[in-house]
Length: 218
Image 1: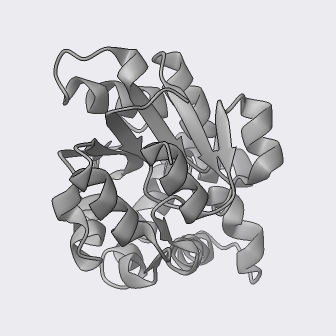
Image 2: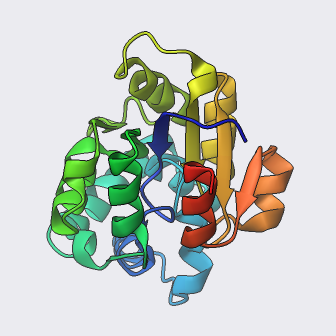
């Protein structure tokens, strides 16, 4: 792989494991809407894509009902669920090494920016990022390609061949490719190798250490 100076990171399933918080908040929102979903493992599919899309795709909600469910989800997420999360082992040290090597790092997440910033602060890794781009609380800018586009522009006028995206779901791959950016798929998250290969990830790694070596060309 050509050495890249600019690196975009997804958050959920890439830097942190948010399963407990996201699935419990989704479960909480479903219960409000009269749906009992006791199996949190079944809800892993909602980690990654825009929240409203998951309510529509997996539970057949109308856009209006999905909006209501999203508000209920956030009711629990902003006080409890955000912190039912942990950073993957090796991430902090990898970010430090990348910055020491002069890499420019940014976040490109479909999660609302305000929550992304709080999570990064919680895990004490916010300082490593040049800028942090997420979606808006009103549901706009949740499409991954749009998020990637805004995150790219945060670096100024740079050659896209010097930028790479790191993510764990097909949405990361598709969104980055729509903007002409190569992608590293990580299988330790929630997409898995089959999903990432199917989406056309340019590179696939299984561990944080493999990711670090690839990004540092070592």
